Every structure is written in C-alpha cells, then in structure tokens.
Image (cartoon, rainbow, N blue to C red; front, top):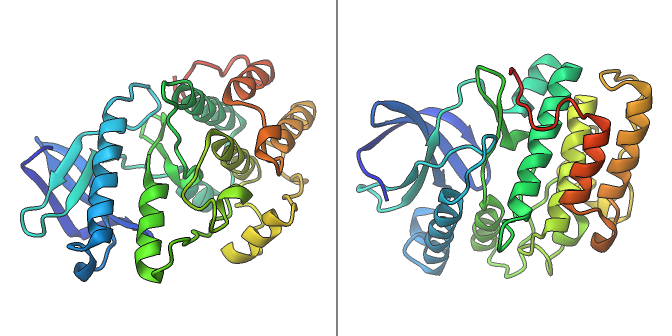
Length: 292
C-alpha cells in the first residue's frame, strides 16, 4: 500500500466498462489512478470483497514484474473517503497505441517492427515465469507509447476484474465480456474467467493484425457480432491495401497469425515459438526498443 496520492476526478484519462482512470500525483511525479467501476451499494457486499481481493492479487503479481516494456507499478492506494483500492502507475502522456492508430490511421514499418517485438517479448516474459502470468486482456489499447516512442504493456489482471464487475451487474455466475480481441473459448459462459496462455496468443494475433492494418478486427461489426463471427470459426481477411509490411514478410507474418488464431487452443504456437518465428522475420528489431 502507498499513501499521499492525489488524483483529480475532473481529469479523466479514460473510462471503460470496468474501470475509470484519472490523472494524479505521487511523490511529485505524474501518475494515473485506476478505480473499478462498481456501484456504491455493491462495494460492501460479496462483489466488492471479491474485487478488493483481485486488486490485491494483481498488485502482488505486477509488483514482481521487471521488464523494460512493462509499465511499472507504483502500488495500491486506499482512498480514505471511500475505502476503495486504487491502483497507481506512471502517467504516459502520449497515450495508447490504439489512440495513435485512430488519430493517424497508420504507423510506420519501423514502429510496427518494434512494437511487435516488444509486445511479443512481453508475453514470452510473462508466460515463462513460474507460475506463468496470464495477461488476459491483450489489445492495442493496452499498449502505451511514451514520448520517446517506447511501448509499454499495461492493465494486468483486468480481465478478472471486468468479469466480476459484469457478473455483479448481470447477477449471472457465467457473465461474459464481449470483446473482438478475445479467444473463442473465453467468450463463453463456461470459459469467461479462464484466460490461458493460449488465449493470450489468440488475442496477440488480432493485436498484431490491428497494428498491421490500422483497423480493429472486423471494423464494420459491433463487439457482439465479432464474438459470434470468431465463435463460428471466421477470421479477418488479410489486409490488401496496407503496405507497411513488405510483400514477402507479409506472407510469413500472415502464416504466423493464422497459426496464432487457430480455433482450438492446443493448435496455437507457444509464446516461445512466436518469438522464434518473429526473430527470423524481424531480426533487427528483436531486443531493441522503439526510438532507440
């Protein structure tokens, strides 16, 4: 636990279904403070207790991670006015890669290589730990880019918190979060809270595709329709008019994505295999950082 955190509700950085993020300060440095969006009446009940437990668990896991492309974790702050746990991380002013794609419509090939390298390297680092750390919520919105162009992965454990928030609202034990980046096996009631290394790999494939194409998967469909498409075995088409990836590299990358988003989890490559295949594809980017 940390103290002496100041945050400003009028300075909203972002708001999703499960959490709101505000600008703040801690020890003279800018930070972001994340608060779970649970109704006031539920905080003192079973749902609130489960979420507080999950936040503590996330804090322990995140505090043990040391990687140059993982957003550092400052700690958990208990707001004395509400007694709710808030997670605190450094403020990255440039924002997420999703924002960058939406604003610019595309990224350079150099940026593509470095982001792909850093992001897949993060997943290998997480999955190779003992026990493995599952991110559970991979998408371009969870890649932050600092002013030097260095990418950071963030929002560990948010999928479990989102599951609990959704469950508390629907009063359903099998509440399902709909997301176009989620693997089919965790988009069902039975698997909603069971993210795995294999489901991370699936989400990583669609994240890579979004970076490649400059568009989210199935951009013309809403979240519910995309989940149905993926559950039925349909996958996005290869980008035709987006040329940041050279033609031959594009063929190799597309073959990798097709393996990563295979319908059956056991058919997907491990994070180690993904790293090895990307080393051959982008050898100059492996182990370096954007902007270096």
